[in-house]
Image (cartoon, rainbow, N blue to C red; front, side, top):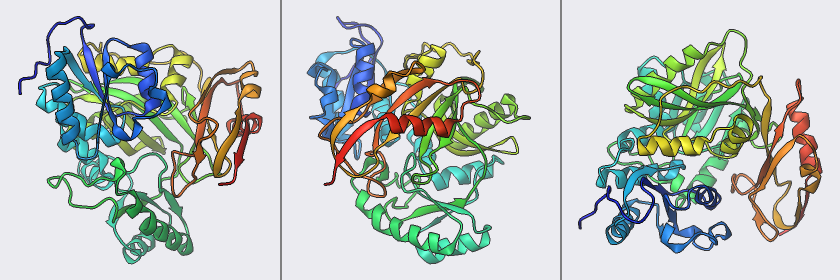
Length: 440
């Protein structure tokens, strides 16, 4: 088969293939770039209402599990349409490996699969960082209660359990007592095997790790401190910051759940951005990357960044909308420019005061069927800039530990008054949301 990735045709030049993202993101990206993007979407989203207005010529459906079907469908589509593909983009961790495979077949730049697999494996990434002298939580790979208890007793009885390759707050447990740990291990042993068909929990390439993400998990020391997140570009040995946000945890929900992202973040006294810049460059190189667009989560312990996760894609959830409304630049467009080779390397530093804006997640209060969903009392507030629903009437809500993404009804973005009590503001917005859920 002959595939040409850089030609001219009637389409807009610089077409990018977006490999595997959620339907709401597909709809958002298509509205902005209807002529310069094509989307390879997992077949399970074929009937999703977010995709109704997107023409079939811009959508390819395939299984994203192993990557080979996605690769073959993309090659056949490009060969038949002669679309001048100039880049591969990916917005989701679970489809980074298929994206890398497709890019390799088309001789297009994309992070190498070995480095991607290492970054997706929480245990292997910590090993790589520790070997390079980069601060990250002490961790061990375990598959049973005895191993988990041993780590717990030898690391201060304050630990976190997490999947080897999960994302967000899925199956995260903070344990400070043995009874908490025993319950968490029981949930891990029950819930991990149920995720065998979930792309996030697929086995790693054998050359990187033989661990089965549905049979083992990571146990690591708990790191106290404020958590932050940022996007950055790493190329030619230099770091360019794209966005920086703080995280406010939803303490009354499953451990790790995010109540709000703040923009710009409120860093503690004594923190120096240059310190973070040096750590990020070394951390990316330790994982095997020589360039890329990255999202990283980190905790500041005595102003020293302790890395939690680094992955070669933009930050998701409500972050792009938060940055667009608060600071006026579009991180998704910046990422697409980077993919096309059109990125101008310079760091963006916000002119706003700390915590000028925030995006608040709106969680479902219970399981069942949504019978009513009304955010008009929220949008009537003058400081609310946007409200976005991910759910609609008729959708079914499932709560953790069975599902962690399904509980998110949507998010709203607000301009924060100075000195705002962010948890209290989140509670006020939650109370103003009119949601009716019928028991299943």
